[in-house]
Amino acid sequence: IEYIDSYYYNKLELTRFSSSVGKYVGFTEYGVKNAEYWNNNPSLLSGEKAQKEVYCLHNIQNWYNNM
Image 1 (tube, rainbow, N blue to C red):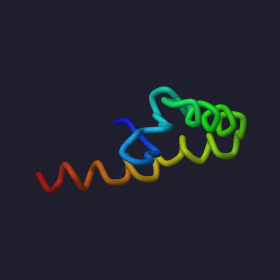
Image 2 (tube, helix red, strand yellow):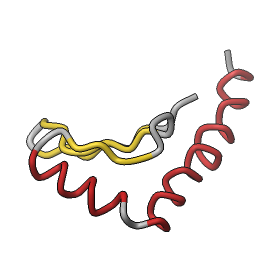
Image 3 (cartoon, rainbow, N blue to C red):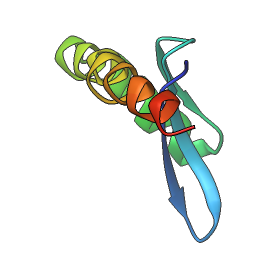
Image 4 (spheres, one colour):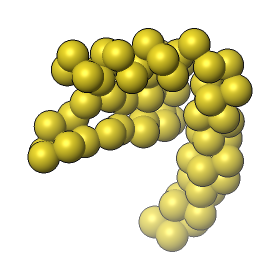
């Protein structure tokens, strides 16, 4: 299971957090600057990493039960 949090503007992906990478990755000049800033904030990174357990792992059993 992978948790992904992406930020878009005008259908262009600027920045993405992936739980398998464990940090933000920027895809544009602006996105790279945001990723660098967000990656230097330990509380923000730990919050995003916790979302995998809160959202994905919590709901996967519900998804399998409804199959």
